[in-house]
Picture (tube, rainbow, N blue to C red):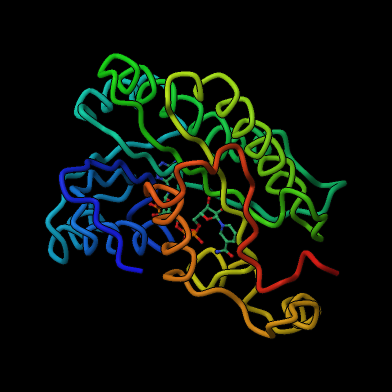
Length: 243
Ligand code: NAP
């Protein structure tokens, strides 16, 4: 199904690499006007060479810089909170710094951006749609992923709270929860077959996700085709969750 976002403006966070970059490319191919947010300028310039998009370069863990930078984010009807980080540590060695950093990006960053954009959506009277990039890690314990798993569990619940309180303003909010996806982050966490093998063995479809497969589900959730889908945390996991 070819989706058409002609006339719609979408903000994608973490658009410089991986899944976020693929979401920006895919939405642009579906005629959306893309505003790409990232923290590495070279990545944003490379994306702008590829697709016609505007860019915001800011570190989402810096709340006041983020709020200032979001001044450019006007007339946004669609938002994808994709930016995320993972810092791997065994539970007993989890540092406060790493825990706070992961939550600052994965949870607080999504909160700050969503508050800004949702206020604009409400003021415009047009409503909108938001998708949060969660993970299978929100509901499964994965070795060395304490901060990440906890942050994605929190993001699922943030999604439900946003759905509850923004739904009456005709703003739909959902999350996607992919399994291992082959991106720089995916390679960092799962590049070693000794680690990824047991997960792969539990996926009935027998393969990890590609970024475009996640981007297509995100686009569908943003589209009018999903007009009655609200507050879900949707696995994109090749069936891992059935086990
Ligand atoms: P990635 O390859 O590491 O790309 C993440 C992007 O987010 C990068 O462009 C990164 O910029 C940006 N970003 C990170 N921290 C930021 C910050 N503080 N401010 C602004 N931008 C920031 O990750 P990915 O694999 O595409 O993951 C994207 C999302 O999908 C994440 O939320 C992740 O948790 C989720 N996810 C990933 C997988 C997987 O296996 N890959 C599975 C399930 C869910 P820099 O490069 O400049 O840091």
